[in-house]
Structures are given as C-alpha cells and as structure tokens.
Amino acid sequence: MKKYLIYGIALIVFTNSFILGGVFYNRSGEPTAQLVLSEREARLPYLSGFEKENSGVGLSISWRALANKKDELAYYNNRSINLTKQQLRALGFTELELSEDSRAQERTLFFALEYNGEHYQKSLANAQSYYEKALARFELDTNDEQLKYAKEQASEAYQQELHRNSRLFFLEAAQDYKTLTTKYAEQSKAI
Image 1 (cartoon, one colour):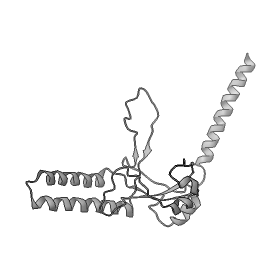
Image 2 (cartoon, one colour; image 1 turned 45 degrees about the vertical axis):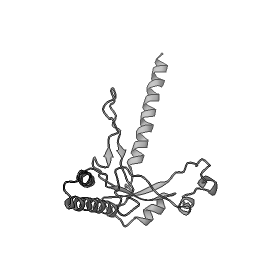
Image 3 (cartoon, helix red, strand yellow; image 1 turned 60 degrees about the horizontal axis):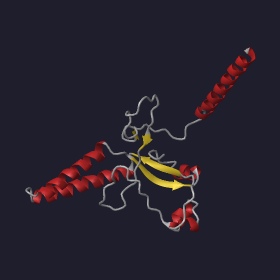
Image 4 (cartoon, helix red, strand yellow; image 1 turned 180 degrees about the vertical axis):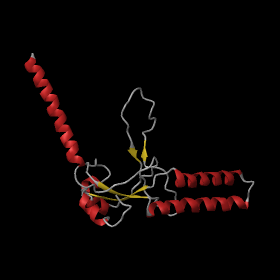
C-alpha cells in the first residue's frame, strides 16, 4: 500500500516538474515581439459569462483586412483576403488544390499583422471621408429621411472606427516565420 502511495506521489511530482520545466523553457529567451492590446483587439468570446461555472478566461484576437475598394469601409471583422493563384502557389498550394472542385489541404501559415499603423490610418480616413460625403448629401436636402439615416449610419461607422474597431490589420501571409521577420524587421508596428 505504501509502495503505491510513493509511486503515486512520485508520478505527480515528476509530471508537475516536467510541465513546469516546459513553461520555464517557453518563457526563457528574448521575445520576438511584444504588443499591448486593448479590448478592441483582445475580445472576450461572444456570450461570455453566460455559461455555468468557468474559472478560465478565453480571449480572441480581433484582426481585420483593409477594404478592397478605396471608398469601401473596413467593417469590423472583415477578414476577406483576396489572393491570386500565383500568391496561393507561393504559399505552397498546388494546382489541383486551386481548382474549385477539389478540397484544399491544410497548411501552416504565418501572418504578419500591423497594429495601429498605416492600414488603420487608411481605414480611419475612409470612414471619415464616407461620413463627410453622407453629411454633404444630407445638407443638400435635410428633409430627406433616407439621407438622414445614411448620415447617422456613416456617423456611427466613423465613431466605431475611432473608438471600437480593432486596429490590428493583416499585412501578409507566408509559409515560414523567417520570411516575415526579415521583411518587417524595421517596422515597429508589425508583428
């Protein structure tokens, strides 16, 4: 009986020391990037707090892609990334996988993201321009309910861009980490 108790305690100590050793190893060395995110970029999952008891906290990273068209707004969670066949081949996808009737294989890819940088400033300028155009149209005919509604929607979109939408934008995807770190090494806002 004592023999099994000693084996059990030894197993628990060994397992805990193995796990804590992995944690120590993971935290040793210099970080490749450090970023302080606000609730705009690190969000609680939808309907968080409605489950029974959960002592864990789950966060999701909220990132966006810049709108494809100049006058289009980059809505919250716009993750539409348009890639050409050449770009997909560069990411390791074969011709067979690119055809519409085949199932795509999984690939491990690395993303470069920009925080509060040029892409965010473009998105902010787009939202401001969108609002100013809607305001100018409304001022031509202040009695038009549709123009009033469009102005209010544009104002809300601009306020969202200023205060609530994520400032983390997609830059590029690559097959290996080194490619992205080399390309974006000098940019302090890229991770």
